[in-house]
Length: 417
Image (tube, rainbow, N blue to C red; front, top):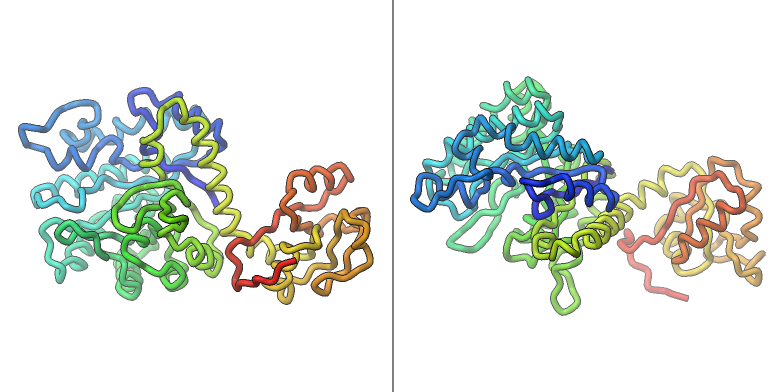
């Protein structure tokens, strides 16, 4: 899996170099760009009104053909700081917009977005459906025509268009919108690709929108499996669209986002695509003086979730494996994975345990690891990961070393030492 950070709330458009440098220093190598950064949905709604104010951020609104001109400095700055931008999102309208005259500019901006992606080697472009002034019964027909009007450009510029599960505004309340019905979504993508004669359309699963719409992550992910190329991860309170860092939208110690079934769903489809962490609202609320520390923490959170997403794949992909540790993590491994992916043995630094068995595994002296073939993976099942990792390297071992701590196990086992 490739980990991406959103740029919204993190990049000062007029002076982006310092901000991209911070992202690089925090460890991010990939980024996602919402073209709304230079073509604000809020500003779009005031187009033609006395309140409309012309500035750097409105160039693409006043003249859509200037969209690439507006984003090129951001791509150049990203490249200068070794940040790869491979996913973008076309401008869209706020969900409570009522101005039907803005649909035409959205269509034009979307086409210019495809051109900008092609000019900057961006593979994926998220394109939201048209919705203003369109009756529910006509929504799929109108948008089928809209998406198919993009085919020639998408093919020419090597861009895959991603549909995304949407929220819908109903009198100020957010409910399920387009692409939240599993069957309709699969059929719609199949029809688009069949008409295009190519696999130009795929799906981006938006965790934040799913949380608001009470979509069951596991059910949705497993049903759309092969269609999903990107997963957008953000947290919110389950009521309003906000882009918060995972695990930060909590109330009374609990999260409104069902992380357990999200992670289980990602594992079930063996997802190995792009994962975007969108925490624009968390970032924009911070003092600039805290930005560096915050980004390092955000990267740690992202790494943790991607680690949890991929633990089962790590276990499965290891041809042979041994464990290090004879405690609760070892027990969790054996209860959940021991039958399908049995280790050769486990080892432990406590000499009193050597020669005993634990969960059916013989406990050996760590020195025994020196006799392993180098293709055997060692899974550390102990919270002192870095210390044990260093110990194994000091022993001169060349084996792959992975950390195991499945916080979202396939089944729960509460028996503890």
